[in-house]
Image (cartoon, rainbow, N blue to C red; front, side, top):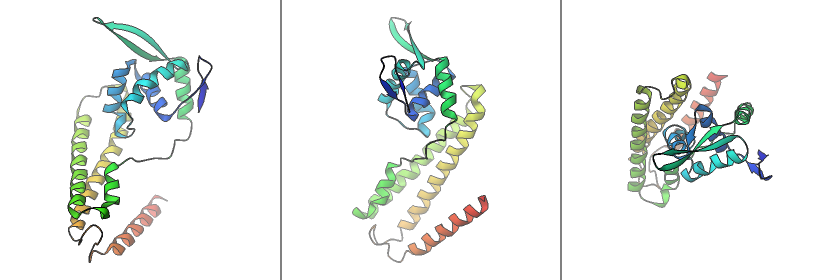
Length: 216
């Protein structure tokens, strides 16, 4: 979706546009503060290049969805962005649209998927890295959940989101540990030996169908 900017050109808005607009709806921020807040919160489920986070507020200003004012911290000037009434209206409109389909970026899984081009040691090291990262993220989630909320009026929404993040990291950790024990039985990443992958796949299909029946 796009809109006409003040220069008369169509500005295409992405989900990242609305992520920044949503943060501006919480409070006013500088570009630096926005980037740090994204790293602290949204980055768990919406990782984006930091450069894009600095460009996006200027686009929102050009579209009339945000304003920019100059302030000074000591001798250093800074630009503070704030949402406009049009921005709040656009945010409400976007919230009423069906969400995009979920996508997952998990670079380490590419190395698992193509592990047959390497060694068993490399695959095991990748699985260990995945497990360690999940453990680190669980520790970070525990700290976030235990800390006083930064925005108390929005703590209930944080609680909803943190529950999902917890379940995902637990699932990743359980899977990595399980996969590590399975790989030990393999002759190599291109030859699993006596490991019964057909039984594993059949079990997966049965579990998935059972879960669908329970949710119906």
